[in-house]
Length: 340
Ligand code: AHR
Image (cartoon, rainbow, N blue to C red; front, side, top):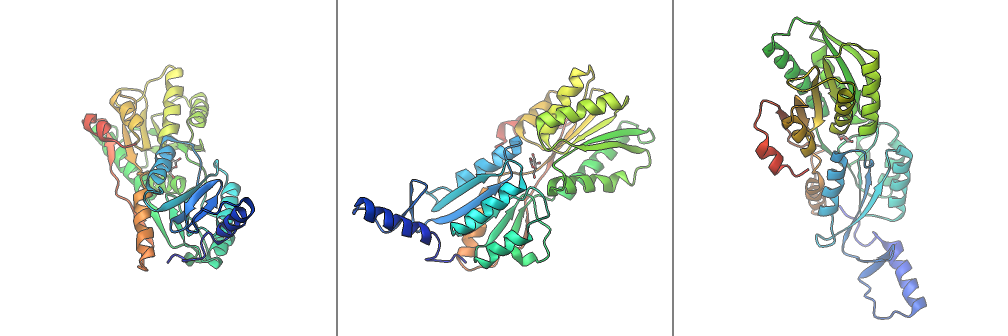
C-alpha cells in the first residue's frame, strides 16, 4: 500500500522553501518541484532502475514503461539507465529511497548482490517490483513480486525445437556441433536459457556443445564472439544466440566468413526475443527459429500497482505469455502486427 502523505515530502519542503525565497505565491501546495518539473503531489512516483540499452528488446521495454507511467495516467516516472552495471543500479535504488518514491521497479542485471539494498528499501517502506530478470535473496519478502518470462522454458523449447527439426532432416544420428552466444553471465535470462537448453542437450548423445561464451546481449560482442568461434572450430552446425542482437552480430560474422546460415544454409540459427527485425531476418532466410521474450511489461506492472493501491495482495511470481516462430511459418502478418 502506498505511504500516503510521506512520498515526496522532502521535495514539497524544498518547493515551499524555494517559493518563499522567490516570492512565487501563486504556486499550488498540491504541486511539488522535482528536477525543475512541477509534479502533482497526488501522482504515484515510480523509480525504474533499468538494465541499460543493450538490445532492441531493451528499447521496447523502456518505451513500454515510459508510455505507461505517464502523468496523464497519474504517475511520475524517475527512470535510471544503469548502462549494464550493477553498481549503477545500487546507486539508483538508494537515490530512489532518498527521494521517497512510492514504488521501486527493478530489472536486476544479475541475480546476486541485492540483499542489503532491498533491505534498505523495505526498511523505508517502499515496495519493490522486480521485472524481467529476478534476484536470489535470503529473504523473499525483500520484494513484493516479480513479473517476466520463463527463461528456462524458452531454452527448453529451443532444445525441443532443434531435436524435432533434426529428426525431420534425417540428422538425428549425426554428430551435431553447437556453439552458444550467452547473454550477460549470471543474469536470469542467461541462466534460464542456458539451463533450459542443457536439459535437452543432456538427453542427446550426438549433440556436442563446442563452447559457450558471453556476448553480453549486444550485437557488437555477438559478432566478436562468433568471429572467434568461426576461427576456432572448423565445423559448426548450430549457433544459439541467447538474444536477437547477438544473433544479428553472429549472422554478420558468418556471412563475412563466406558461410551461409538459416534453413537453406550451412549453420542452423536459433535465437531468443523474436523482435520484429529478427522475424524479418527469418523471413529473409537467415534464422531458423526464434523464441519469444515479451518486453511489454509496463501495463502489467501498472495493474500490479493499482492492486497494491487498493490494498489487494498480488501473486508473487507472474509469468507473461509467450510463443515462438520458425521459418516454416507464414511470418507476414506477425511482422506487420509486431509492436517491437
Ligand atoms: O533479460 C531479457 C534479455 O535482456 C533480452 O533477451 C535481451 O535482449 C536483453 O538484453
